[in-house]
Every structure is written in structure tokens, then in C-alpha cells.
Length: 243
Image 1 (cartoon, rainbow, N blue to C red):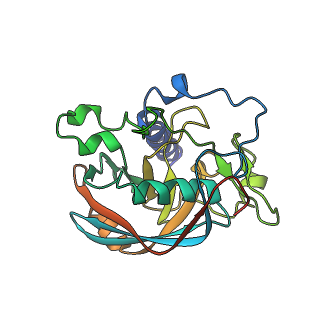
Image 2: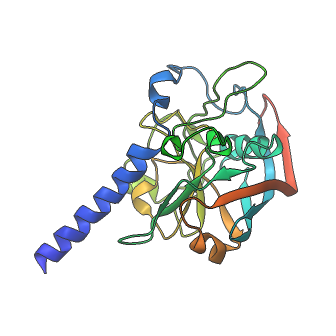
């Protein structure tokens, strides 16, 4: 019994390493040094979500709807809505699906995966680059605790006592941003939790949940496509002010 428990624990650690090691590679090296610079909505160069938004995703396995939370994750949810409206996710590939030995995540959103010239072996290494400026977009880790008015930015929360107070946690169907080892390197890639993953709470920013079509998410296999994403409800974006 002891060896079986140890093996199960090792399996979970390996699964966690899959997510940590195979999120956008190289982002930590080129992410800006934020230092003590403010990183909330009032200082962000990207828009924040006011209220909620519902995003409809047409996938090769069927329709899915996401409900995004602008109260608990205004910057992260706003970034996603902005990219949806820019068409960044259309034609992208779900490049990482981990279901064995236990359900883990379905990950997609790499803009480069929509380019037929990019080999599949490179999927997962890309982020959003603004075509107007040529600059790579990076957003900070955003975590809001119950009872606090504003989210925290830029630092992981590792205390189990504190992570239990998170407004948004990694429940089954949670939608969160993928990133490299740098907490402030999220860009466009996202993932859906296939079951509760408390090990990731405080380390990755959850910004919404699957409100319809979780059965579709369960059927997605590596290589399936996100054909089109669009905002069908809400989605009010604000810039340089509190949402």
C-alpha cells in the first residue's frame, strides 16, 4: 500500500512537470522585469474585463461556452476577450491533452499553431505578438482572494491556508492561463482543468469556467482544432482604470 501511494504521488508530480515544462518555452527569458512597477488594470497596457463575458468556441468536437469572471480576474479575462475579438484563437490547435494516467488538462491557444507552415513539434512555444507594434504580449499572474477588493499581481501564492481563500480555483472545468516558469509570462495559451487540480492553485491564474460543453472538452484529443471563438454576451473592456 505504501509503494502504491508513493507511485501515485510520483505520477502527480510528473503530470505537474508536464504542464510546467511544456507551457510556452522561452517566455521567461524575454519577459520584461516588472520590479516594483504597478501591474493592475490601472497600469496595464492591455484591456480589463468589466463584469462578465460569455465566449462561444466552435471546436472540431463540438460547441463549448466559457463564462469569464471580470470581477475576480479582470486583467486575465480582459486579455482573453481582447484576443478572441482579434481572431487570435481561430484555427488554433489543442496541442496538449493529458488524460493518462488520470485526467489533467486540455491546453490550446498557441497562435502559431494556426499557421500551416509551423510544424506540430513547435506547438506550445508561441505567444501573441501585436502585428502593429511587433511586441510580444505578456500579462502578470493575477490572483484574487475572497474578501479583498483588488487582485494580487506578479507573485505566486504557495500557502495552502491562503490558496483556500482564492476567489477562483482549479475546479473541474476551470479555465486558466498557461505560462512558463516566470509568473508574469502568460500570453495567449490557456487550459481547461479536467478535474479539480488544487496543486495548481496560487500558481496559475484561473479566469473563468466551462459553462456549457464540458462533455465536448472531455472528448477533445491532441491535434483537434479550435475553429472559431467569439464573444456572445457581455465582454465590456476598459483601459487604464479599475473595471
